[in-house]
Length: 114
Image (cartoon, rainbow, N blue to C red; front, side, top):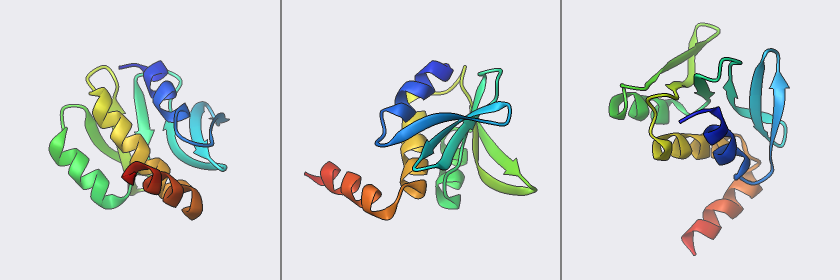
């Protein structure tokens, strides 16, 4: 995987924009950041809930590690060269659902059930 793969997945989610965030690029839904990537393009930082972080660390430790931000675990850091696209897509969607407005997230969940 590479940053363009991450970009394609993230932008495919409803109402996502890509915007600069200091020296990083960020992916946002309605202005709220759910993932960032440093300029080197080798990693992506995905801001998932604690339970999703813990599960990802157990399932895929070869390419996922804790993302520490301000001394706290804020999500996962994914090494893109070793990452599996399906895992990254799932994590991006979980992070998107966490940050998206409730009505938008509910609409997406409802459309998946039908």
